[in-house]
Amino acid sequence: MKRFQFGILVLLVWGTISSCGKMKDLEFLRIASFNFDNLSFSKSTVRMELAYYNPNNFSLRLKDAEFDVFLDDRKVGHSLQDTLIDIPARDTFYFPVKLEVDMGHVFQNVLGALTNKEVTIKAAGNCKVGKKGIFLPFPIKCETKQKLDFL
Image (cartoon, rainbow, N blue to C red; front, side, top):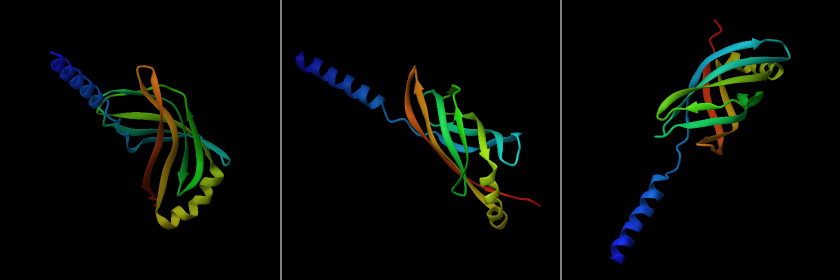
């Protein structure tokens, strides 16, 4: 009888450990929308929606995102988000971003963008992702190349 109880205990422990698999990273898909709120020569405010996919079998919540945005490896802006976003399981979700952009750094990249016809946009920072009130730090890393057609 003790062997049977030990076998059940081993199966329960194994099942519990295997069900707590590592969370898969959220996948950056695209920039879904892009609008200027305030446009000036020194600082501008940009609103974007970033499309991400959650490959996990469970829903999550995202909060306290803080990240920098780079154009061709030059920092052009910073964003601080304090809203709570619900992330559905195995589905696409949209992350609204309000970005303060230093236009001086953007203007420095314009000449390179005109010659290359393509610019690399990166975001790097951190946020908190969790479930049921338990939040863990999660890195924000996304990169995309954007073609620029001025004509």
